Image (cartoon, rainbow, N blue to C red):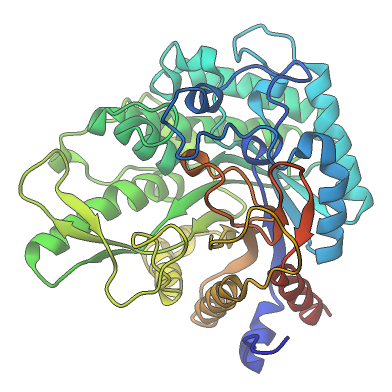
Length: 454
């Protein structure tokens, strides 16, 4: 492919150590929101609230993977990926999320078929058990602010593991708890749409407890690999001014360390300056810090902040100087070297407590047509993936243990509050017809995986 970036021989040799994957999430690709006994979750409520989603889309039918999973498995087999990270919809299994509800056999059957199709295609299934789809009934009683939700999550996990644990050995528990807490409960940009600022932070503790609870259950069912998938960002001060450095330290604390420290060190960072106390009970931190087999890390871009003297938060996010951007605009800069720097900092900060890292999401959205009338050359995405994989190779060479890399996403999908206005896929999806068309990045990723195979 003319103009396609190439890896240096040393980088290519280093990348041979990785397992390669692609990822999706249930609400973003499945559609069929009222079929198969499925209940309602907080994103059903969010998309049905006028004005919440930028293009008023509702995630249905979208890619319609509920009916087209066989096509998706064929695409994965064509890529040659080692693993497929997908998510299981909580409300397809426990429709109301409540205690004592009989698991929905139709939902379990759907995911069992998907797992069997993946295994038959030689692709290892890696389900995520919570990718933002909290049952509406649980949100009505406090959602992740209520410690009882942890127990309801455990019951759901047990039902899934009972059905799939004999074939599924690799699991993700909670996806991006920072986004749920900070954007969902603190700022209200995502479901459930609350705007509680620092009062939202008990949702952090309860999600981390849910991870620990799920880890214990999954290991009882024979799991070989269990991890959360935490989203992180290297936080940069806009200038060398003291206020900007202080602002960067605060955001690093609540976006990165608030989640990584409990998981890896068994304790929260010092939150006294923010006036925050977590609702910790005896045994909580031991459960949260149950050693993980890998550390799932989602990374897209750095975040640049400017210190502010007034307002509810001591920082504001600003464009990163001299950086190209993805389709999301100035707050999604393309700075692949910051992934390398963040990975090296993780190794420095956590030392032997840090298990091998799996990059559990990395990718970029760029403007593309809604309908596909011919080949789609997405050279910007190829460059983004190439440069971030080079950053991963540099981190490995610097001594960071990294075991895998996952592209977000296999398919164009419903991008939460941005609806269908952002396209991340290696495969183009016509959201009206469901037609799938591999882009040039699909061929690039396929060829890369083939080139690093023994």
